[in-house]
Amino acid sequence: MGGKPTRVTNVIRALRFARGEMTQAELAERVGVTRQTVIAIEQGRYSPSLETAFLIARALGTTLDEVFAYPDDDTDAPAGPAAGDVGGATDGRGPRRRRATR
Picture 1 (cartoon, rainbow, N blue to C red):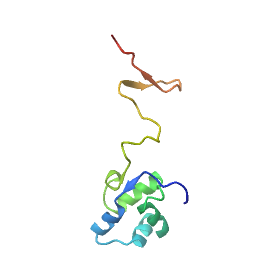
Picture 2: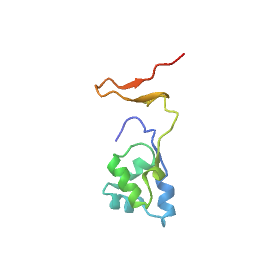
Picture 3: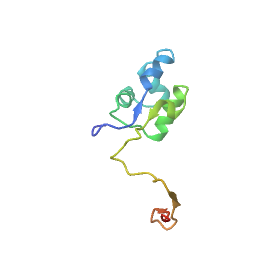
């Protein structure tokens, strides 16, 4: 679980306390991971799989987007669709862009 910290943020600790002070061990047991994994996720040192993220949200009685967030100003990640994109090509070349009209 070493390496670069994740940019994914979470409010697991706050939600655990809002849900009757659930311990890390209790959350880990409900999700099916180790307590050390819960600690690493809470501290932003590890990004859970999508399935584990859904299980954490379910164990905390909330939705995935209430537990986890990803910053909008990410400059390191691949760019998403740009303004003006009209959809992806089906030939594997990526999104097609509208030509500017003058």
